[in-house]
Length: 357
Figure 1 (cartoon, rainbow, N blue to C red):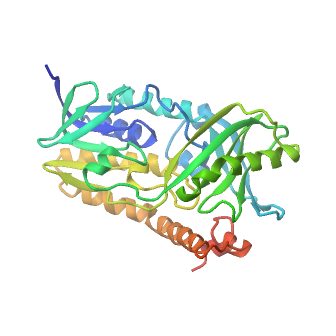
Figure 2 (tube, rainbow, N blue to C red):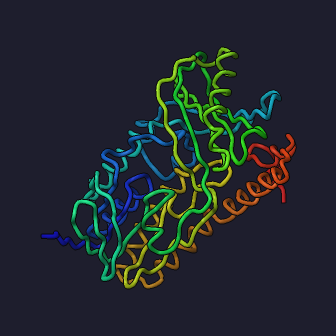
């Protein structure tokens, strides 16, 4: 016999966006069920783990999950010396601990958080069918289930443009407090990175899907170069990777039959199309999605419209600029051409050219 469970809000995905949405909605007195197909919060880690200083304004107790403070950004273009942006504060976090802390906060607020459970489909009459055989009858559904969101597909909103990434964790042989960015014509639609975590570092490459076959050799080449510079060890501690949406903001609210559906975080396309940064926008959009769901349930008929407008006000300008810069640099490859160092500068946030009209 199929179990039928009723709730005010069903949150699909318990990353930063979903956990924050669940916590906020639960604090208003809504009943909340939140599910995630992973067996444990934040595992496996599919993230370079850098967050900007501004996130400290949204969340407390980040010190508990901080592995290292960052003070600057070093950008390497081809074989040129690094360009240093000194005022670039942030943190490298333990993403597993970060996600677990957000889930704990959601549970403390009263949300029922369940792992190892996947959304199978959403059907009429406000129902969501889960992989464990249960059917949830939810008044509002929030999709925070990542770049390939099943919730988003239900309402015809899905990320068409993705960057594929590969990352290794390696021992760091000298102290470092900057995020290193490697721009090259050989990495179309992406970049390489070295993010230090005290005595280890995340070393990775992200590129357009059509260059996916080159990710492994590109990462090996970057690793070899840094080994040759005496910066990292030949040892590889861990491997990871994943997809990052880079097509800009989707339609973040729609109806599925009589069910209101909101999208947040990567599922909403809020990841920056140039940097791939998405933790801050995930937390903020999750917060707003949870509040919008609660407001609508408490009688505010404009809550979902307000949610859409708020996200556009907060992230629209930055996302639109990043998408333009991304498209500009990708156009450089048409006709088997390669972008120049000047074009690469215009494509990256550390340079004034990026911010120009």
